[in-house]
Image (cartoon, rainbow, N blue to C red; front, side):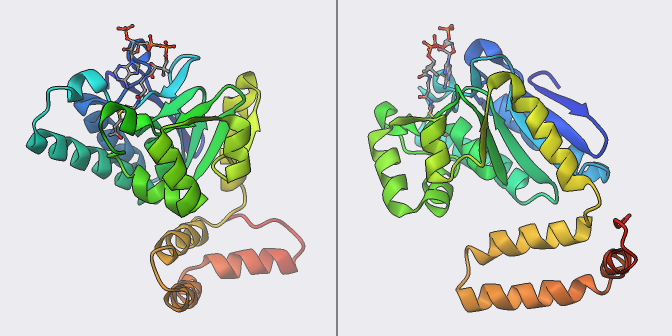
Length: 256
Ligand code: CAA
C-alpha cells in the first residue's frame, strides 16, 4: 500500500498514514487504503490492537486534503464525506482496540480519525482542532457527533464554531487525551499500552466490553444496562470465564 504502512508485531500492529509532504492529509486514495488496511488487520485474526499514527515529526494527520476538495460538487463532497465516515466507522466498529498515537497536528479529518479511535495518546507537541469553519465547511468525518460525546456539547460547540486549536495539556484536561508523553516516548508508550491490553486478558471479554460501552452511549441508560447483562451472560457460553476465574482461585495469571 502506497500511503498506509502496516507493521505487524506480536498481537498488535502499527498503522502509519504515510504522506508526510502533505502532512498526511486524507484524500480519496488514502481513505480507500485506510479502509482496506483496517479490514485486512481486522480479518487477520491475530491482531488485537491497532496503533494509528502519522509519518514524520510534524503531523498525525492535518485533515482532509484541501486541494482535492476545493473544486468538488455537492454530490462529490457528499460521496467524499461518506467515504471518510465509512473509514472512521470501520475503525471504530472493528473488533480491535484502536489507539491513536498523536505525534503533532491532528486537525479536521485528522482529529476525526483520532476521535474514531478507542484511546488517544498525545505527544507534548500535539495540537488538535476542527478548523473546518475557517474553510467554509463543517467537520465531515464524524467530528460533530464524536467530539460532543467525548467532551460534552458546550466544549464541542465552542471548539467547532471557533475552529480553535488546543494543545496537549488542554486536550488532557478535556478528557480528549488519555495520556501525554514526550515526543520521543510516544510510540514506545503506545506499544507498551498495546502489550498491556493483550497480556493475560480475555479477548472475547474485551470485545464485549468495547461493544457495550460504545453501543450504550447511543441508548437510554436502562437499555445500556440491559445490554451489559446480556453480554455478561453470553461470555459464559465460551471458555474464558472459567479459565480466568480458575486461574484466580489457583493464585496464578490466566492464560487465555
Ligand atoms: N490538505 C492538503 N494539504 C495540506 C493540508 C491539508 N489538510 N495540510 C497541510 N497541507 C500541505 C500544505 O499545503 C503544504 O504543502 P506545500 O509544501 O506543497 O505547500 C504542506 O502540507 C506543509 O504545510 P504548511 O506549509 O502549511 O505547514 P505549516 O507548518 O506552515 O502549517 C498546519 C501546518 C498548521 C497544519 C497547516 O498546514 C494547516 O493549517 N493545514 C490545514 C489544516 C486544516 O485546515 N485541516 C482541516 C481540513 S478540512 C477537513 O478536514 C474537512 C473534514 O472534516 C472532512
